[in-house]
Image 1 (spheres, rainbow, N blue to C red):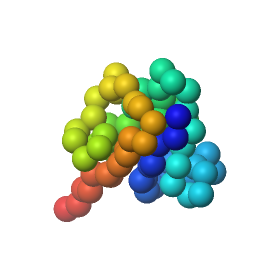
Image 2 (cartoon, rainbow, N blue to C red):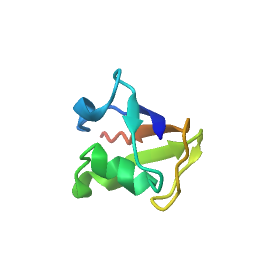
Image 3 (cartoon, rainbow, N blue to C red):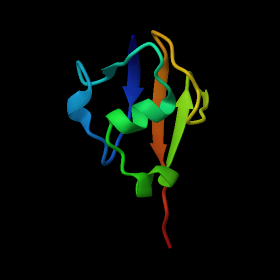
Length: 77
């Protein structure tokens, strides 16, 4: 299956086809996307993930054509 991914920051962009598509197996979940993008475990709490414009959970299953968007949280002082 092929999903569209929008991610900034420390993610591994080299796994994306055409700069925005990720090819995954049929049983892929949001957790699979985090793993394929090599987002380190310690940084995962600082990313918000959306599946088709709705908040996503790690266990959410993906289907062909889905869109996954990651937003990094900002901090400041």
